[in-house]
Length: 102
Image 1 (tube, rainbow, N blue to C red):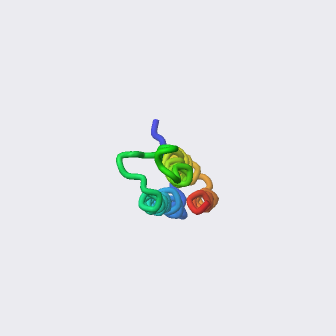
Image 2 (cartoon, helix red, strand yellow):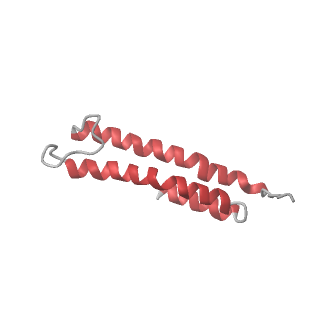
Image 3 (cartoon, rainbow, N blue to C red):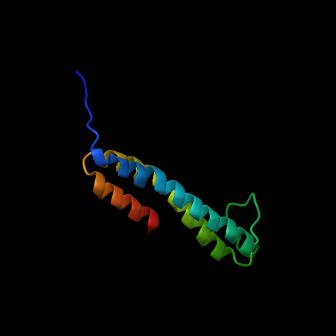
């Protein structure tokens, strides 16, 4: 018994939307964290700012948490998009772009 998977011609949009755009978005969010580190004085190796020690801990932690949330969720989202794109490539590609931009 053999299994055959047909990849639609427009699947390249899935590779772009679920493979390339998340990398660009992650780099953008990482840059925002680096800028916030300098602005709020949070040094490495601290992942988050410590309240009462860092004056603007909440502001920095919001930026850091936004990036961390993206990293935590993009793996599962990309996998489901790669699979769903086999049936609905354009819809999944548009959804990926909206996910990364939003």
